[in-house]
Image (cartoon, rainbow, N blue to C red; front, top):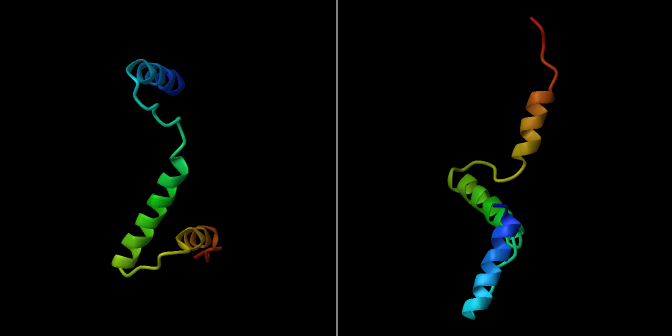
Length: 69
């Protein structure tokens, strides 16, 4: 069963029982991403590591030309 089908079934059951409908799929995804970002930054601060710029540093390290020899 797909997510959409499950949502429609849950909405139908909620209407039958007079309960509030569940949130639509994907409705809270942006909030979840923000919470994960904030948690990652918090853990970095607790570990005394830089909280920002990790992606740029990683890409720079991978793309930096290496000396042969």
